[in-house]
Length: 156
Image 1: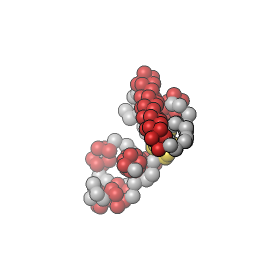
Image 2: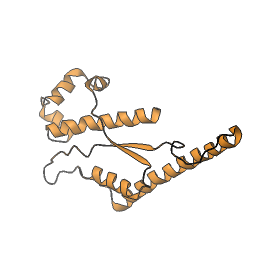
Image 3: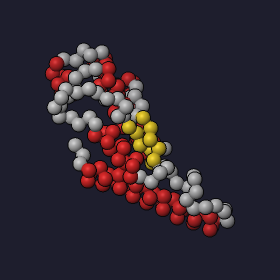
Image 4: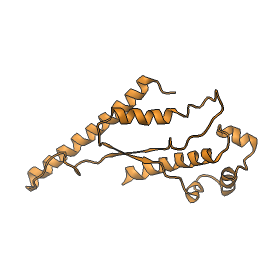
C-alpha cells in the first residue's frame, strides 16, 4: 500500500503539474493579449484547463480479512490529493462503467458474459483475485471505464 510519503509526493506532483500547466497557459494568454490587442486577465477562468481525474472508490468490494489487496488505498489517494491540491484545479468525476461493446475490443464475448454472470471457472476467478460479487463486477467495469474516460479527456 501507499505510505504517507508516497501519497504526499503524488499530491505534490499533481499540484505542481497543474501549476506548470497554468503558468504555460498564462504566458500564452499574455502573448496573445500583447500581440492581438485583446484585453483580459492572465489566469482568469478559461485561460487554463483543469485536470480531470476519475475515481472508482464508490464501488467497494468486501474482501476476506487478511486479503493482500489494499482496497482502501484508492480512496485514501483521492482524499490525499484533494487535501493537498490547490482548490479548483481538479475536476473529480466518478469513473463511468465501460460498455460491453468497448470490452469486446479486448476480450471475447463469451468471457465477458461469463464474468458478468458469475460463470467463470474457479481458476479464472482466482486469477482475477477477488471473489465474484455485483460490487466486484461494477468495480472492474468502472476501473476500465475510468481508464477510457481519462484517455478521452486527454485527447480532447
